[in-house]
Amino acid sequence: MRPCDRATVGIGSIIFNGATIESDGMLAAGAMLTSGKTIRSGQLWTGRPAQHLRDLTTSEIAYNRAATDFYIENSRRHAAARCAG
Image 1: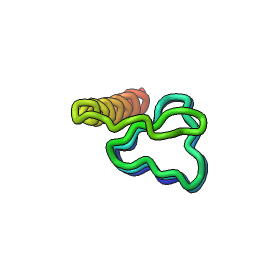
Image 2: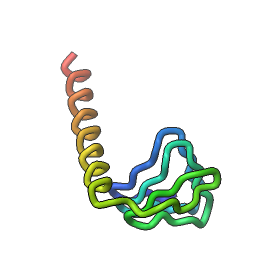
Image 3: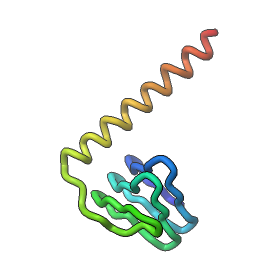
Image 4: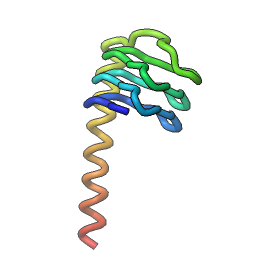
């Protein structure tokens, strides 16, 4: 499996070895991406097995990027609070 920077993977998804998600690609929650499949940048895939549903809008891509930044910063705050005691 090769998820690139800014790839969005929904909760409960399964990604097989040999699958790739390019930057700004999105795998929906609960989907199953099988070996040899590639989610291209800006695409949304869903289903079991996953298939291309549609292209993401520029606002959806921007939202996913902002959400990723939020979760990264939140994890840093959480780690710092745990280390502080």
